[in-house]
Image (cartoon, rainbow, N blue to C red; front, side):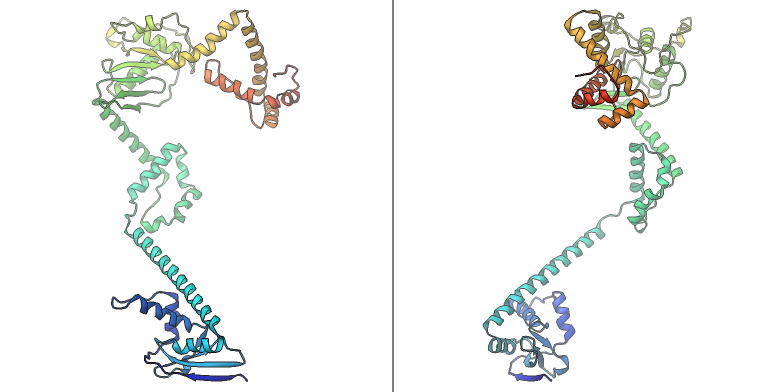
Length: 440
């Protein structure tokens, strides 16, 4: 049976200390009163660490009055040594360590104290940071239901996803997991969302009308239906006026009616609209030629853009006008603003339709090279339009081939660049498609 040695040494200060006091003090840093010094706080932590079970084990049943009794954990297990001392004084315990276990044990104790103090300090800093963060969040203003609804509304408007997605279980789960109910927030239903979008639309239209009332001059675009103007501080502003389906025949007279209708809805007349920009569709050109207002000093249509300029067929469905416009009742005639044709569209036509026409009519090395290249490219583009060949192209290239628009230069450029970039797989592709004409 192990024997226990008792060491009783004198000390001047005595305070009763319980095990719970020691454990609590090791976990958190106790508040220090203004009269305490940094030195007394540090020494108090050191005394508590001395009795935490690493060097000495506190024996509460052996403590009487002012005396503290602890077992030395560095002594051999078969000879357990009890050391007695007093609170606020570590000399008895340190003397035992130095006398029985040497200076190395004292150095080990000092290192241990430094390590524990550092850990306690980190815990205290973390506690302060967490507490500060929670306090800051609690002081922040919680999002209102109005702001929450506005965010949902803008998301659906800008993403243009179906309204029923708001009731999708996985969409609503996002907000359920965020515990929005604890903030007093409710996710709106599909019907409510639809009504909010209609109300938002009406608000935006009223806002645009209010802004246009203050503007002396604007420029409009048709087909996209937008208005543009420059403010007094030379800032360009653009707004969308309308977006609707144009049913029926897109004849020039019906185009004139709908243009006048949209302009009238926003109180835009020929005095305020300096010009309306369109593409080169024949229906647009004829509508403005027939009903458009011409400038007195510059005849834009006849001089800058003469009637001899070839026009592009409308992208929607240009048709030959059947009945001529009735000019017997001039009071019912709708006068359109000054007409400008889109310059970018003009350049695109020049780079496609006009350039191809010039190269086709000439017999030069350049035209011959152009014809040969376009012939080979057309073979691939036609193949991309057939389902079976399109699958083969997808398997070989990992993507399909874009087919260019006849009057869109950017479309033609992108399609040619795509074929040029696949030249390393060109031989494999032609073999897979059983083509004899190879594009090198």
